Image (tube, rainbow, N blue to C red):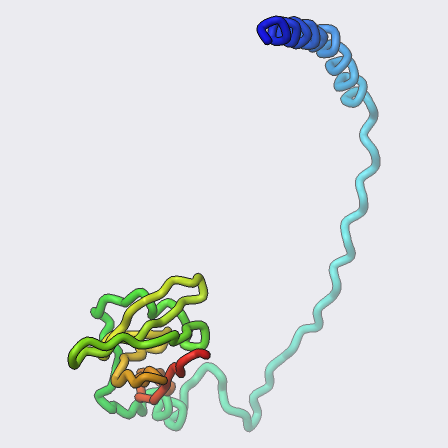
Amino acid sequence: MNALRSVLAIIAAFSLTGCGDASMSELRAYIEEIKARPPGPLKPLPEIPRVDTYVYEPRARRDPFVMDARSAEALTARVDTGIAPDPLRRKEELEQYSLDSLKMVGTLEREDDRWALVLTPEGILHRVQVGNYLGTNNGQIIRISPDEIQLTEIVGSGQGSWRERQAGIALSQ
């Protein structure tokens, strides 16, 4: 065994001596030859297409840079329902997933407490209960039954106002 190692070490030493200065001088000569070649012609620049100009003549049209009363009213008319997500609330783990990607796989019960088991797309199992948040739309769990998780989501309804909507995740078979 030791003799075999010695022979392999000698073969490796001789094979590495071939990587000496001779091959480097050939490489340097090749590089100098490439650098000495005259440069080729440059490709011409691509033709830039001409863009026709447009002159805006307002005549009886509305000036797009001036806000009229109707436009101003539409921007400021907000129905304050008192519903809004809490921006200071710390996000929970399952709020990074859309409801479509989460699966309810079961429930656990102990005395009066019930938890739902939720599986993420990565295969991680989470235990949630009423009051926890799920999904990307500020969905808070309001009820857990043996076959469904019911949520109330807070979604934007345009112009900075919010509304509640009901959603759910059914038990996966």
